[in-house]
Image 1 (cartoon, helix red, strand yellow):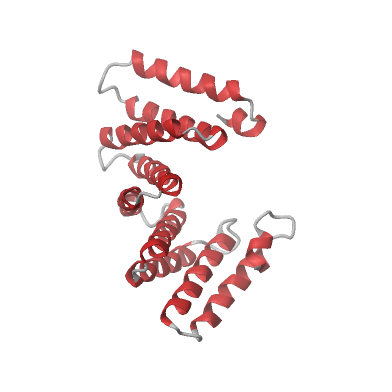
Image 2 (tube, one colour):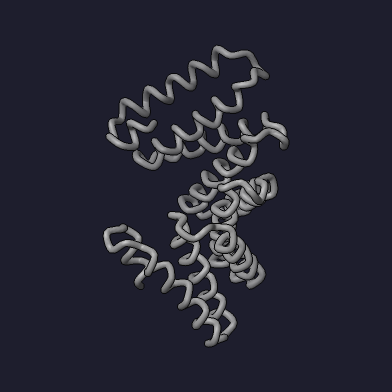
Length: 219
C-alpha cells in the first residue's frame, strides 16, 4: 500500500488486495489475525476506490471494516482503530450517495472509537476532532443546532489535548474556528465571530506558506 500511495502504480494495490483475499481464504474462522486481515482488505479497497472511483470497492471496504469490528472485543487495543476505519468509510459513502443513514452510522462508529481511546493516547485528540467534523457535517445537512454545539465541544477538546508544536495543531484550530463561525451565523451572534477569527488566525499563522492547506486557512 505504501508504494501504491507514493508511486500510484495500479498493480501494487491490485496485488495487495489479492494477497489479503488469499490470506482470508486460507486462515480458519476465528483465527487471531482474521480481524486485522479484514481491516487491511478494507483499507486497500478504500484506497482503490479513492483512485478509481468504483463504488463497489467502497461498499466492500465498509463490509470488510464491519467484519473487523464485529470480530474484535472492546478491550482489544486495535478495536478503536477498526471503528475509526469503518466510520471514515461510512462518511465517504454518505458524501457519494447522500444517504443520511450512512452518516448516522459513521457517527456511531466514531463515537465508540473515541469512547474506547484512553485520554493519554496520542490519537485521542485527532479522533475527537474527526467526530466533531462528522457532527458538523450532520448539522450542515439537518440544521439541528445541538449537533453543531457537539461539534464545537469536541473541537475544543481536541485543541486542548493537542500539544503546541504538534503538526495537527493548525488543523484543530481551523476546525474549531469554522464550527464557531457557523454557530455564530446560525444563532445570529456577531460576537462569536471574534472567537472564531482568533482560532482561524492561529491556524493560518502555524501553517507554512508552502503547505497546501495554507490558502484555505487564509480564506
